[in-house]
Length: 159
Image (cartoon, rainbow, N blue to C red; front, top):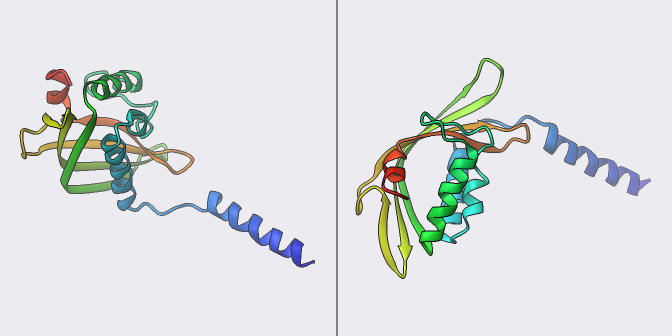
């Protein structure tokens, strides 16, 4: 009888984890950003693109596949990346169709490192560029980027 009770408690705990609605905490967006930054520091482009939604579309018409190719090509040019950000501000909203979105505005500086030489990608030297990232919460509770603004200068530079 004890085994059945323990098993039932475990099943209920697992079900509650997956079915209980999670709160919308702006720190969740910061966690996603930090995961993307860590992937860049380690030179793993898939770690960056896994946080970009298949639904991605920006004002320039770029889709997930365009972004994935850009990120992949940038990662071929550099050994690793050094990324800093500040002044993160996150606003949580819900769309008319019930989807949860988060708009993150922040200042970011990205440098690519090749043969231990830093090259500015976003921001010059130690200056920061202001960017806005729009996230959507998936049905599984993961936040992914569906739109970006302010990265066009880095893309025009050939990165």
